[in-house]
Length: 501
Image (tube, rainbow, N blue to C red; front, side, top):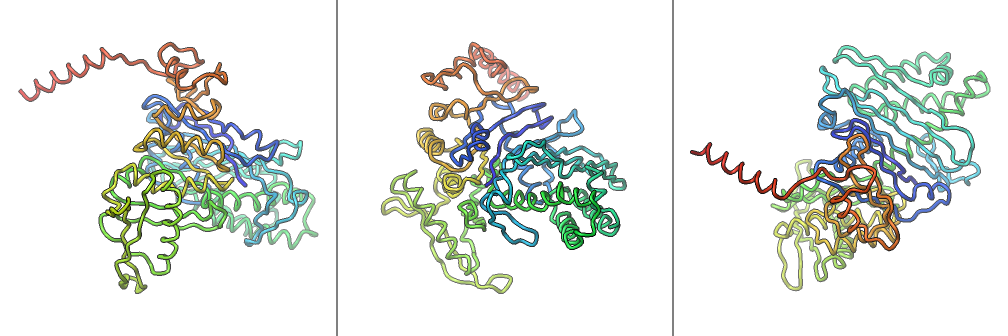
């Protein structure tokens, strides 16, 4: 099980500093809870809410061993050289762990250690020659059952000047130096893997090629354990063993259990592209597959995937009927055809049904299509304690009363974690005050939870009052005035009329 604890942003877009913590994280560490952990972010337009979702997208990409997309350049502040993100999270290995080579050890907790408290830090920097690059990464780990301080597993610092100069420093140098003592070939291959990962804008900690080189070193040293010096043996147990266990666990979790939906994901719905994420892994199945369908025309699926797709739709229908009574999806099979790769394909079209009325799903509202696209992910969060879903503008297109019911259900019964931004204030009445984070007008302290909230207070009413009167430790709203808005509309109209004249 992996649970997110706290995310910190530094110089990320318009956020100089901001920290958001999941409310039950400390209880998860001490009591092993697997219950709901929901955070809703509210605030003024342009106050940094989307930055949190974008930052989680960067973390998912890096931890999954994928290359950062070019749009990450836009997250760099115009007047700054770099941005940083830090994630604190918990890994409970008591239910089994991945071993080198892909095996699983389901030994008891005494053998595999207590839950791990982990910290992953990354810095992305600007460079005129390459646009941006991963300038620094650090992974730290602490066994929560131990009184020892956290151990730095791998810390990589990069200096780049265009495409022709790249220098790497790897620490803790004493430990890594001991590991590569007398193994120059292993070190050369390790250094090369680090360079290639950086040039491809990938994580140097979670890169598959870097892990492969370290795994090879691990196997070689394990075979020669009796011949190792005390210094090398100490480094082997102190940083190499934790790395070999932790990195695959984190990477698999990022791939299978972590989903980030930005506003660009919602744009797919507007353009009639339906992206259904069949996350059987989020339900503990261990694998996942996505279905992307152009609703403007029938889609062709490989024959081997049709049964899986129909099964996903059947599962979605179980929930959709509770969201939209009497509503269901149908899969219309339009016949077989040969695909470009020679495989047999099936042309399918997704239809919606209300009572006896059947229409193409593309004719439904954006809100209905959005509910269809996220339902499977919400099922994952409800059932899987390792599932993590981050959604920007969750309330967009969804009826506020239904949204409140969904949030209330998740906050009481879900086993996974949900992070969302929204503008609709009705869910504030359904969430615990500790589960609601507000963005502020102070970029140096961008996110706060409200103080002075009692059990009999209506959080929505308190928030609206504080927008008008203040009362929190940071200003929560950069003031607007109805009369100034009226005057601005008038003056803009006059200016445009002069241009037309």
